[in-house]
Image 1 (cartoon, rainbow, N blue to C red):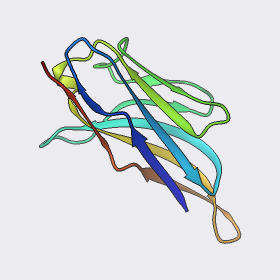
Image 2: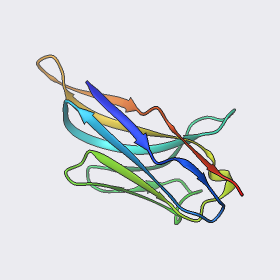
Image 3: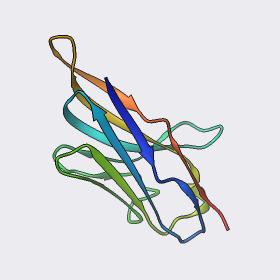
Image 4: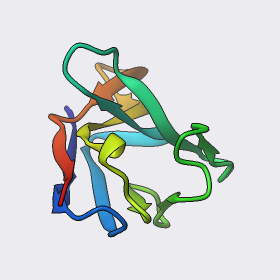
Length: 123
């Protein structure tokens, strides 16, 4: 069993900063990618940033230069440092992970999602 869980959401004023964390736990063999997505009501979930085992971060155009994704070593946690927050950054932020885990006598690669954490940018 593998579990992915986020923390760190909340209410922040425009221009402020917030850091999200996401940790993976369970029967993990390796983590191949971890990412942050966000979703607002009525819209599709969109990619915010991701990072791979080769440490290559990718950012959406809307957050590039303001957000930083990073991970710990050995890898089980990914962070999203969000600076210069704007009201349009408001949404539920979800952690996504591509993880190879120990299955029934074999390794299995699967996608996992956290439950989401609310980020609200408002004065």
